[in-house]
Image (cartoon, rainbow, N blue to C red; front, side):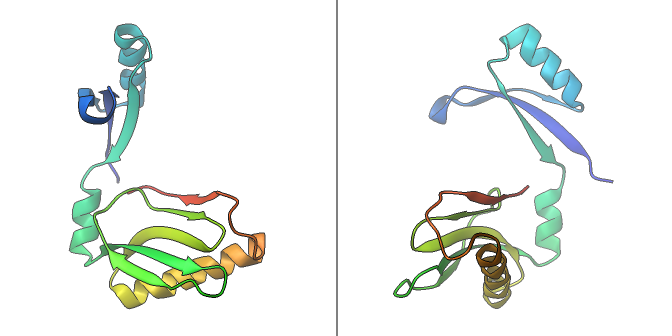
Length: 134
């Protein structure tokens, strides 16, 4: 069973700080309201999620796939963040977990096929088509 923690965070950019870590969303929301006037963000984290991904041999990849001719496909490994996919006029940009560069490209091609089936060859709508959990 996944265990989650709820982090109360205040500030912006270099002034960000953790105000508290809670075992329930209810406690985090109550403290945010009563002590911080709902000025904090409540972030949810799954315990050991990154350790599990690493133990499975997964790495985090970024992929840029063209929606029009003349745009180069790019695949690179990077630091984990929240997985996403969005479109711009010429390409789809996405990031997610995969075992290697080849699997990352295969996953990206499947995501692009689904995108084209759903939206057509439009691009540039600025849609956050997918947004996932780290």
